[in-house]
Image (cartoon, rainbow, N blue to C red; front, side):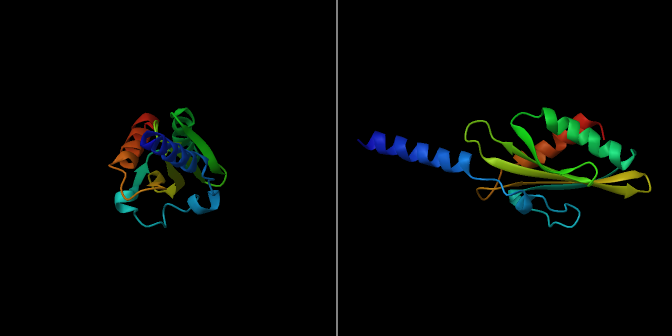
Length: 138
């Protein structure tokens, strides 16, 4: 009996996490102005030797092929794009926003990644930002 109760609670928790709606207005924020999320995520600012549109397109190309990641808001024309990436087993959502602006060296990129549930992400968001930057070659 206790096993069935635990299984039921597990399934309810899975449903709450996986079916929780995403509000793009809550997550599609300006990463240049946003505070560092601390243990709940990561923030990176970097100057790149590419035109702004090209730098954003390179990051978007990586995000488009990243496992369990989908675009939720923004556009290249806006200069800001947001994505949700879900963890493999639990399906926990992490939100990443990337923005670009002109800089004397080409462009300045801001990447902001944060979790929705929990107190700390064990470095998952920081690792994703490092991987996206490396894969994009920016």
